[in-house]
Image (cartoon, rainbow, N blue to C red; front, side):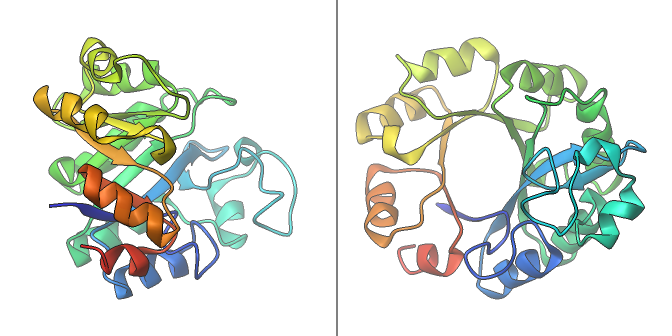
Length: 225
């Protein structure tokens, strides 16, 4: 089975990482939702991609300098809001931990606490470009899947993934071919590709055997599954 994951919700149709985008993704038949997690000033996991609110709201400033209540007033949801929606609709979540530019203290612990609160351990995969963060997540709760995000070609990424102790590779789709997918599968690792929006590329990722296709357009992906 190939998972159809809506990137920041159905962000090709609705403003990214909003409840509207998440709800639209479910309406369009996604299997799950990919989103980005940071911490508010008061330590609450919230969902936004950029380290500042400038691009996606009418405000300006760093996410870390606003409380959860202030961010919610800007239309930025909390992780708990999405977790409830996912639980009710029986979908999976890919939570990207955004702790590269801003290093959030206890981001991993706080996210995993919420996952456990809703008993979603088997319905979540954590990912990050910060691979040390994924090692930490495994130390906190080994049962939750982790994926390593990367954008450049790696030499034998499946061996690196095993060394780090992650469950999946999350490469940019342009770095993926059939041989790479097969090498990962031989080591029981998943290959979850991002961000695949054009139908020709979606079809190619299906053909090479990707396990998850992350797209702004889950309706397009659904046509090829």
